[in-house]
Image (cartoon, rainbow, N blue to C red):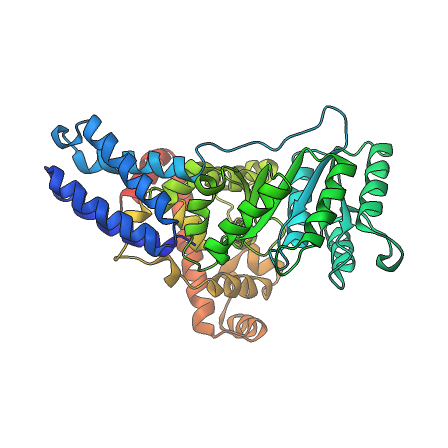
Length: 445
């Protein structure tokens, strides 16, 4: 989402770091460009103005002009101030003293509340909390069916009633009682939205709020709607009282300024972000990490968290043993590819690696062909178990059969086998004596 802003800021700070000594005039010129970049990214103008003022005051106060690395000092200050306007620190989700803790999702129609309800429920279950969803959106056709379907797909508990013979408040009250009886820790209420804020919508939400006393009222906003999202956020907060926000479609191609303005403009913290369509593409919102990503500094913490979720410790230990015995085969290669795929797109993963920002202009992560990984999977799936375990038996006729079975050419099969040989050699070097030195040499290369 922040790609355009990131590119522009990268260009500004590239000039600063390459300049050596900096004068006050140099920094003023750079901050003018930063302000323009923020405004072009749809950041609210008061927020952009205050941000530049804060950076200038800190730069003057810390005497960065006299430091040995003035460019790096300015970037550090910008990162800190950017993290502040993004919200400062991550805010944990609240929990009631006695279950169930009710989380009410509110927002305009089309923001993605129903899908978000399932994502949040899945995330809470991963935190070892029993969770239930309640279908309180009786306005939108098929909203109840959609939530039930998501519950079935993800094995999540859903409470629903027939829309024609119930009301949202009745559903919320009945779901609360059921959750309490079953000892459910969190109850998520998926409420109705409208195309615009109106008194009927607000009155319905107030009734549900008063009947269930939610510990969290999360406003779900489409991050691609720009400053409209900021305005509607303020209106919901004034009428209902919002405890936090969730931004959906953060993987989109919008300018991203709404996310940068949201906390400063409304005073309400962003708690979660949706970063893709899959149910697991849902993250806790960390302002400092987002600031680092925007400035091309990577996000190692989020990368490690993604890896910890997807990598199985027992499988990792078994792979380590195979590496030590030089038994790494195509089954292992396939397994590693599938695990990496679950972590997200290669563009996202590379964006979290520190130093990728310095490669702008020389390398574009979007040039990576994501379909190549699917092609590799198809080729390996077209092999017999014997061929996967011992690729040396793959002769000309076997290559042709594998190519036909996976819809590729024999040249592409050969390329994969050659890549695998290189991978085997690399694994052998790393797992053998002096492996750490070999790994460092490869990384330097």
